[in-house]
Image 1 (tube, each protein chain N blue to C red):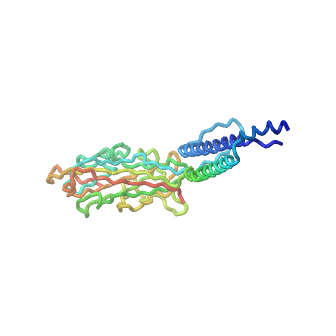
Image 2 (tube, rainbow over the protein chains, first blue to last red):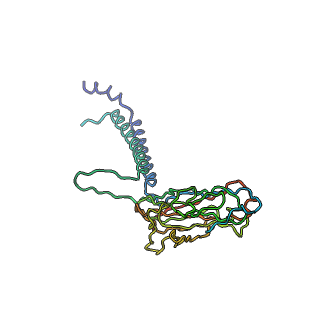
Image 3 (cartoon, helix red, strand yellow):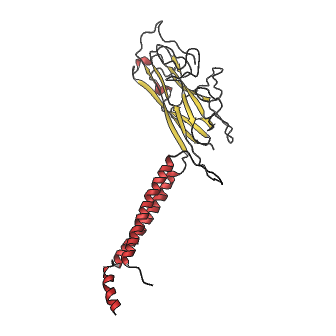
Length: 77
Length: 239
């Protein structure tokens, strides 16, 4: 009987079953969300199937003057 | 056997949640790190090392700018990346015809920096008619493709695609003979310029030469403003 009366206050300090249940639900949700996030991101780590690059071609045409002996020659292709 | 107290369970749950969150964050961090790494390193003193090298498609336009500079025109004027251009336009090569001369407009160099052979496509935001506002009958915007790199350290890089039998396009451009197989650019059209570009160290580049014909009356249209076209290259795995 003494053991029962001394054990009773210890049980009162425990959190309620409801709290444990909420924590369990949170755990399951976090784990599920984590797995989902990782699986969703795996595609970014997969090998790329194509790669693109760009380059530029530029020139400036100055105001034309009257054609004369100093006019630029036509180059050869 | 005595049941665990609930508060012990709560502590265990908190640890579980923490591990789960930390694991997710750590995994995502590692995945991002792996994504940016392209080389493998390691050392083995004995035993077998097995690894799978993933297919890496990668390409770079290592010389990506062609700037013909500026100049006046009074008649249809031909500008090209493999010639000494007239007037005050940039001379892309030396007058003696030296093709290895570096310059602002020597040509584009496309390089396979992955670990598989690739096919390379080209498209342009402009064509002759949209590049120049002058006489549409004389304007031209063309390209030619040469195997090897600009400094001519090697000259064999675009192999034949075993399935299609196609290789470089357009073919037969040769610095030795001076023949440039110019192809007129159609705006936004996608040209497959190499059907099987090697990734080998001494055979991984192609050169894109560009040729423009400026109409003689172009100086009357928006003089002094820069005309430019973006050339886009896309690399994909060889079929």
